[in-house]
Image 1 (cartoon, rainbow over the protein chains, first blue to last red):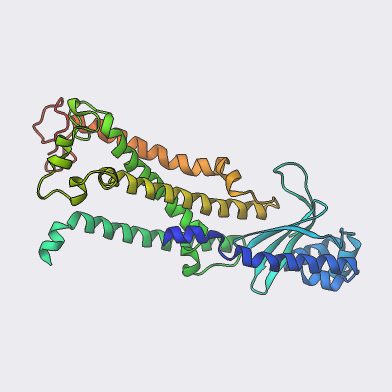
Image 2: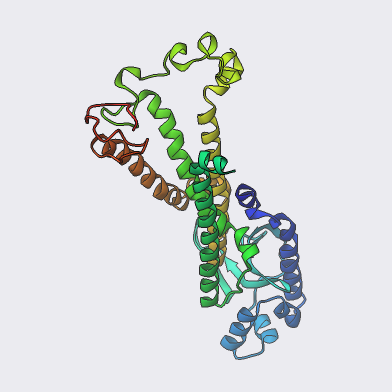
Length: 125
Length: 224
């Protein structure tokens, strides 16, 4: 049973990866069409609140002012337990957490800083 | 029923201890994980989800693999390696796989010997190594399980720190995997080695793991 559980450690990850990728795709499209409200709806609560607090404006205005890269294609998605990363065609990435209502973006505008190093993110919780 | 319990009391006792300890580990681990989640403002998880999680699976399997490795190595090395004076060792003149006569196989099998000890070929080859094969199989399976659950935990932590996850093969070369592995191996090797040498000089009256109390320290391969 435990071996089955071990093998099941990544169970469902493959099923959930397209959902995480779809959230990122919608986020990229929202930014591309300058729809700040739609983009903010895909962030998790802490990330949206932190952005609004730092910028001194509502999230939907602050996120457009942040000039995040937009409209990029999804290259690869990885899901582990309730966390996911979505790599994009330009080498950037977004990080997501799974909440009761589905995947929410916890970090966006992330750029690689070096091999095996944490990404540097414009928005994070 | 009473005879069955008495005749199998050793296995039954350890089975009961194992189940009780595993349940205790599940309850304690569940409480610890939820305590940590509350501290970080993360959602808690149900007991059902916890026992199927990589946290619980990893904690269990990394101990299993080291225990089964210990017995696998002990079974294998005591074929050839000796310890003068230890009840864990064979007599000093019996190092090696021993003759068919000593092992009561083939034409030397007795009427009540297991059937696969009497036959030749693959069946005997399998049967005469069956203990090692099964113990090694459980060890490899548990170790693989540890690597899968460890990878899941490791990558979850990487994602939390905004690092991309690593592959299973990459994880096998990482310090996290080997630290979890070796911290368990070293304690098993110490326990086996110390048992082999302490049993030369120390006794436990009535235990087959010890020599009889009055046996000389030099007596090798004698069980009490």
